[in-house]
Length: 170
Image (spheres, rainbow, N blue to C red):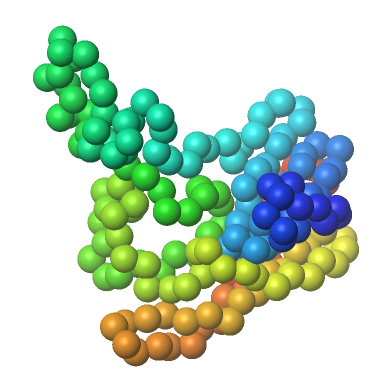
């Protein structure tokens, strides 16, 4: 287990390496698993791209995509398919969605988050267990319904195994 600031944000990330895999956790960013490298297949199972404004979207993001006149007809259709994430995409983030949220809303990052867990810091401990390293992450946060605050504690125990597999218990 190594504790290092991989993204230079002033908060350490955790790196757990075995012969078969490497696991990267971000306790300061929702306790998420942002990378899971599997050595024997030379693949990162957590490889996703966060959707952020790009220069070719134009100064106004998706609303000002610059295209040629020939492609102008496709511009409107393209704008309907560009969405931006408000957080880094990774596994094990704890979302509390408003009732009625549809998968399409989540896909578009156009949903209300009731909890305050996705962008906030989790405390953590690590301990060896037979056949694995157990990393426990926990946070005391809240769910919000208008002005009403309901305290909630989220605890998740990750068991990272030498063979490259893992499991999570909440």
